[in-house]
Image 1 (cartoon, rainbow, N blue to C red):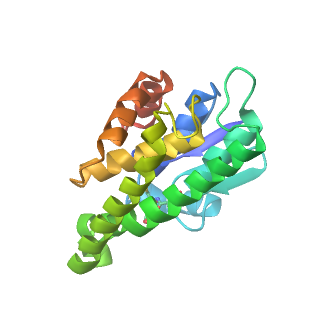
Image 2 (image 1 turned 120 degrees about the vertical axis):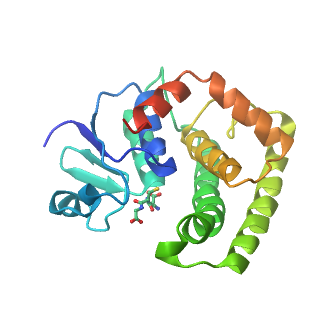
Image 3 (image 1 turned 90 degrees about the horizontal axis):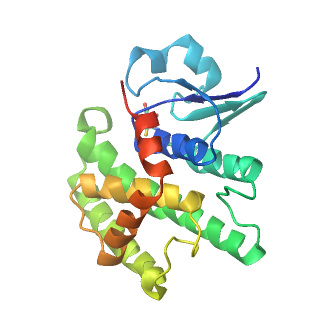
Length: 210
Ligand SMILES: N[C@@H](CCC(=O)N[C@@H](CS)C(=O)NCC(=O)O)C(=O)O
């Protein structure tokens, strides 16, 4: 197989992969499968990703799942002098991976995904009001602590330049707002700045369900 193929549209996690591809100006083919549809359960997709989750990226012989890994793979392999999603300086790269882990583990897996499963999809995962309440207050505590990093008035999470972790953070902020969570003012302003980045609108359009 040659070329870039991205499976999945319509979710916060699929948006991350579309966004990295769009920001880097890469040509790719979209296989527009959606969660909880027959295509997700079908043999064709199961042979691509036996876990039955989106997104999945194919790049030639490589098949890659997990949205933070996809964003970082694209950042590391397709960034150039004009458009880059990951810094080259060691200390900034360390900070990139710190944000990556924080967003994937503390904001996504431990907080927002708990709400998604138990508030959004109780018929599948079961209701768990107490766990959801704790997840909300945990998200609130984590995002307030993260906001301390913005106190130096940096434009993006790593400073002056947009990067892969801004993609990941933005998807979590939007997700939190959809669940009725109030963001700290510094993250509301940060979110507005992200809309000024031209790839934002392109990526949302690429991820839209048609
Ligand atoms: N950790 C994975 C999570 C992927 C994931 O759970 N994707 C959801 C859509 S956002 C999905 O495919 N759900 C289908 C299901 O669980 O059946 C990532 O970040 O890519």
